[in-house]
Each structure stands twice: as C-alpha cells, then as structure tokens.
Amino acid sequence: MIDWHNIDTVMLDMDGTLLDLHYDNYFWLHYLPRRYAEIHKLEPDEATAKLHAVIDEHRGTLQWYCLDYWSDKLALDIRSLKEEVQHKIAIRPHVENWLARLREHDKQLLLVTNAHRKVLSLKLEITGIDQYLDEIFSSHDFQHPKEDQAFWHALQSARPFQRERTLFVDDTATVLESAKTYGIRHLLGIHQPDSQVERRLEGYPAIHHFDEVMPAPKGVTTPIS
Ligand SMILES: [Mg+2]
Image (cartoon, rainbow, N blue to C red; front, side):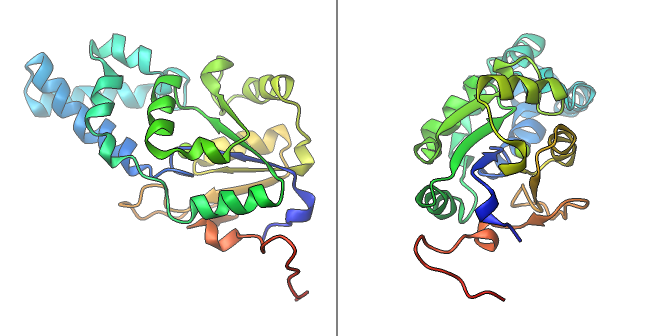
C-alpha cells in the first residue's frame, strides 16, 4: 500500500491520527456545554444548543482550533477545562510501534497539526509522543490552518521538503484535499478517528490502524509478491 523506498518525510496529524479523537469530541460536544452551563448558570439544553451553533459556524477556520479565541468568546479558561478531563487523552493503537519502526528506517517524522500550542503542550505532556518526532508544527505558528494553501507554503519555507517524497497522514478529508492540491504525493487517511464512532473515509487510501502499513524491520527484506 505504501512504497516506503520513495518516502523520506512523514507528516502526521495529531488528533484523530496519532491520538484518539474521542477526547476532543467528548470535550467539545459534552463536557464543555455542561461546564459552560454550570459556570454561566444556564439551562443545560440552552447552553448545548448555543455552543453547538457557534462552534459549527467556525469549523475549518483557524479560530475553530484556537483556544484563546474560545476562551475569550465563551469567557472560560478552556485549557483548565481540558485538563479536567485529561485522563481521556489516549494514543491510538499501534501508533508508538509504528513511529519507532519509521525512526529505525531514518524517516523524518514531523507533527503537523491544527491544534493550538496550549492544548498541544498538554497532549504531549500526557502522551510523550514527541519522543518519536523530529519536529512539531502548529498551524497557529503560520496563521493559516492546514485547509489553506498558505499553510503549506509557509511550512515549505520554514522546513523545506520534497512534495513527491512526502507521506501525509490525516483523518480529515478537507485537509487531505488541501495537501493533495499542494502536490504532496503520498496521502493516507484514517477511517475511524474517534474510537467510539464508526466511520469510513471515502476518496483517499485509508487505514483503521498503523499495523496495516508497518514497514518490515530494518535489514529484513520482504519477498516480492
Ligand atoms: Mg485530525
């Protein structure tokens, strides 16, 4: 499925790709509305409807991913609320073995995320996945989300890479589309980013888990099929 000989840079999304998206969905759809209602003394249903409407309005924009924006807009300390449910932050199955194997093969591993630095730091603290990564980029550093071509141009200037020798992995179709438009040659999607919600990603080669695309250990040649 993946021609590892022709890839030297692997760019990885975080939420829904390396980490279970259940934490984020649970936080934004259930926990935040509950705490918002408690803190601002609103009826729970009213708070939920209000929040879902404003959150949806900003989907796919940089603001949608911006902790400071939501902290301001909702008059809440979002980072502290995220810490209250940090026990739900989880690495997806097979991720660590897969990253360790790619390191053995000397692939350059870059985290390329729309997550805000404040939540990124919480997730790295809890999971320690940064030990496998060469560099970490948040789209907030570039003022454009991965959905925009401007993001890819800015990333290319900050850290040059060959589009035709790069694999990009992400669970969001609109982000894969953006990477494709920019000319990234190898694309891979994730079928079920939230472990609690069944989904199949259409339109891109995709996997459930990284054991499906595990390269052989270094020095072991696989038979030619
Ligand atoms: Mg994602």
